[in-house]
Structure formats: structure tokens, C-alpha cells
Image (cartoon, rainbow, N blue to C red; front, side, top):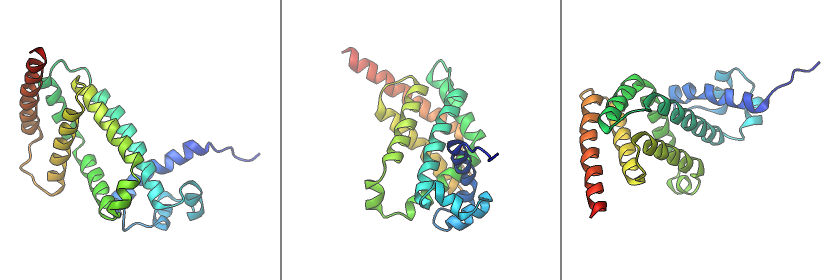
Length: 196
């Protein structure tokens, strides 16, 4: 009897194994043939599921953003105030530093090798991923202000980029404490403004 394959599950398994391949070689340098070799599948099998490397990368972004948001919210959830939330964020960044640096490297490498006009026109999955991160940040902080969420994400991305570039002076705990103080002041000022 022929083996029954759950194609969706198999596709997801292939995608999840690709992250380390992209991180090791970089988006631009790795070929579909090398990806297939790294996954120990035929090139034909890989093309059956993904018509091109960019399509595979887009699926990877989707899977990673879903997984990361779910995992982060579980790990960071249940904090009573901004100070506790920032302590949890610092611990999360310290625990996941290598992974976050790898993912940032892969993302920067991908963007560097795209035509900026095409990248901006074909960003549905990237917009969805960003929206997912933004909503998770709002949930984590217990706020509805998407601008604040964008600011926090930009701040965290900046810290990770500094680490990627080799800045060993970045202290996640201290940086998150400063961010917590800024957020507390901003949110308190917003409440005062709304009360007037």
C-alpha cells in the first residue's frame, strides 16, 4: 500500500528546517539545489512545494512570525505593570539573543538582495507578519496604541541590530529599564491628556 503523505504537514516541516540553512549561507548565496541537499530531498520535491526560493522564504517568514508571536506571548504574558513587562522582555531577549540575531541577519540579507520597488509592492506576508508582531506587542503591554507598539518593536529591532553588528556594550536589562521608564511616562501623559 502506498505511503500516505500529509502534504501540508510535510511542507511545514521543510519550511522549519530551512531557517538554519538561510542563516548559515544567507538568502542570496544559497540556491534551491543547496536547500534541497540540506533538507535531504530532491530538487524536484522542493520545487513541488515551492516554485522559487523567494516563495520558500515568504512561507518561512509566515511560519516564524506565527511561531515567535505565540511563544513570546506565552513566555512574556501575565505581567502586572510596565516594569515587570520590561524585566520579562529583557530576560526574553537575553535567552533568545542568538536566535534573534540569526533571524535579523537572514532578514537583512533577504532585503539587501531585493529590488526595493518589488519588495514594497509584494509585501503582503511581510505586512501580515509586522501586524502580527505589532498586535502581540499591544497585547503584551496591555495597550491599544499601534504607534507605541511600532516604537517598541523598532527599539527592540535596533538593540538586536546593534548586537548583530558586534556591539557588546548593549545591556538588554538596562535598555529595557530605560524603555520601561519612557513608556510609563508616555502612557501616564496620554492618560492625563485624555482626562482633560
